[in-house]
Image 1 (cartoon, one colour):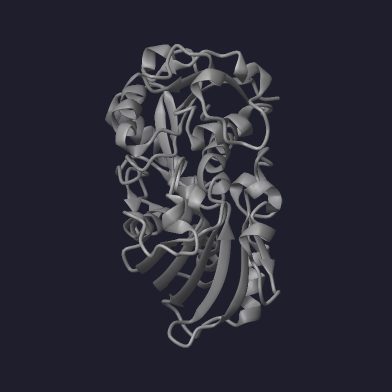
Image 2: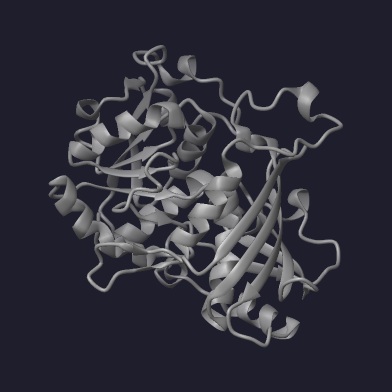
Amino acid sequence: MVNIKKVGILGATGTVGQRFILLLADHPYFRIHALGASARSAGKPYPKAVKWKQSVPVPAHVAEMVVKPCVSNEFSDCDIVFSGLDADVAGDIEMDFLKADLVVFSNAKNYRRDPTVPLMVPTVNTQHFDIIPHQRKVYGLTKGYMVTNANCSTTGLSVPLKALQDAFGPMSHIIVHTQQAISGAGYPGVPSLDILDNVVPYISGEEEKMEFEARKILGGLSSDATAFDMMDQTIVSATCTRVPVLDGHLESVSVKFVNGPPPSIEAVYKALDSYTSEAEAFKCPLAPAKAIVTTQAPDRPQPRLDRELHRGQAVTVGRVRECPVLHIKFTLLVHNTVLGAAGSSVLNAEVAVAKGLL
């Protein structure tokens, strides 16, 4: 049995914060204890502070809660704090919580490049939790720590790449082109006149995130668990676009391996189908039954048809074929607001419970 952990949610009125609430409302490990948002929302009952944009009502016990300001002393009795804050305010707030010796699982980008902070995809690199003792030493903490989850598009990319890396060794080149859903821009998001009947071939900062984050996630740790070993031998090139789809990022990927000859298509499908993660082994509540779902249908995956597989926590991969430029190419789909956002943070925290870190 797991002792129920009291949870705080920062940015609780935003798109990611609302997803946190839905994922945590009836969670077997966690109980929502405190909600935080901006000064204009603090002090209000949650239903009066939020523009609720989910397909189910606000959970009854959450509807009775009053929103707090995002300051650490208001959350001092929380065992875990999940942050869905926007990046423009997350940096100082999350550091205040960390220095108050609180456990922070963040969806924001601000500390993804920090050399002591795990950048974690829960079905890929939970071994990076091993750097937490070093992080605590650096910041003078006894029980607190910070873990960030990856950018939504990087999350989807990293899962099949991890399976291929495990099976066929390191990659020298990765090229990815994304078609990203409008929900990834938050609310109110992309103006309708910009996205209807259109594709926007630019998302600010997205390509740089993917090119850095994949190399940190798929890298290892130093032997003394005090530093990340980046995949410096791998070149990642990303092109990111916004398309008129509500949820679900579609990505076209080409890969070249360091060691040749390239694997067969059958070997690639076998590696993807047989891949498992620690989250699955621990039987975490939000872990998908399969981290990767493959399809050999010529026109799949598709956002509308495949994004909800395994409650949005799996990555669907199809169209695996030989690449005339690199070695192999494939198409993947990730639910950007579930595994690509709050779902990663919550599953990361479930793994932390399984590892005795909470």
